[in-house]
Image 1: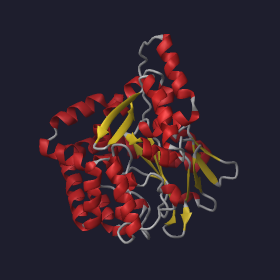
Image 2: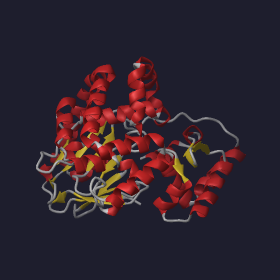
Image 3: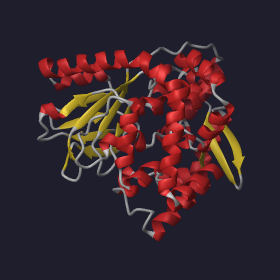
Image 4: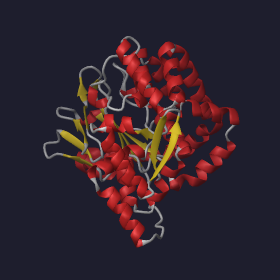
Length: 374
């Protein structure tokens, strides 16, 4: 399984490495909402969370699904703006200005990414702002995700301009509260890494540059296709006439173990790569329990289910729709995972949502957890 990027005919000068303050703010918010994904950031997440104004913390909960279980493309607006440079801006304010320039259809589809589990593979589909069936589907899926997702989705579809203002103010308040100081600290290293990899690309070629970005990236011999080894299928092109040529690699200090590939239809592809890959400390466990858990995870379909369950809670019906199997089949797989003590289950209204227990999975080995979160 992999995500591929078609680069046939793409001039090497249209491949760029550049930091993005808005993308890094997304990853910082993700780390705050999912500290178990980022044990190496424990000191930062603990201190930052403790220092948050309670009002700001409550406001962040209203939209945390845009960075908690997935990463909404609105945090990389430079990739979705037709006629733009295709590159991140130097400051958060400038990137928020680019976000303001996205038309409502692009903004809404990107913000509702959590509602479109198969968005990238469906070619985008009609806009829920104008198509009643697309709106109904978005709201139905949002309802299954939870009441906050549904409330936000209704607000977004009824008043996209109001949500734009609300979101920009929220991100600006995050910048004032903690991110400006954080960005001042991490930006120099990201810029240095981008300059270094640009030089590697220029003097040693794309294959070597990709190897320095991540062992999960490769390019074919003819240099027509970049492949990202991920537990998901997808494809993108860096020469889409709808948006313009270009491929951008964006470094992140907060991203490990996530290697993200933006491959939305009609957007320039972006590879968001972590600068650090800390090792997870091993923890002891009984051989019998380890064997039971490894057997539970050995099935290919259960590994695929774990990829989703590692990111956010899902219902049985949602998982069945995403992976094209029946709800009873999903239930049988979940029962095996639950018997091995790998799942949490909670009620969300009339829905039962399941999520992988990352603290348990982490004890099985860093290779597995990095694979399902990449």
